Length: 159
Image (cartoon, rainbow, N blue to C red; front, side, top):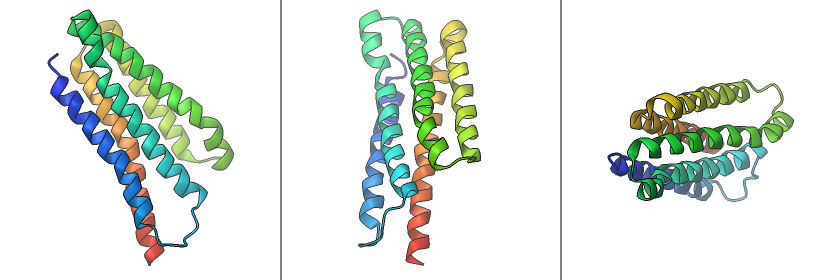
């Protein structure tokens, strides 16, 4: 499969980014209470990174079974589209309950829905490895932003 190196690299980056959540927890001042937002951010970093890790590895065994890169990308694109929408749908009740009116909620739905639509079009029309790769890179965007916010919050706490 032509994209195997890229997929393994994305999986490694996702695993590394998930590990950074432990770094954030370790750098937290002793005795500082955890806010609901802090816990949510760290949990989402790990959840989303493991989603990306899985989604980056999915095409490899599919290709091993079907032996056709276009079929592999079509199937994997549908899997990623379903996971993206399911992920944002599963966090919706908590997000709306804990942070009502947060505009980032609509941003997450809009971006993930647009990427899912592109992936479904990829499955139906294009079978483009590049579209699949771009979706994986975009999926790393959310945990990276959450990590940046968590680090920024640490600096603010230390004053």
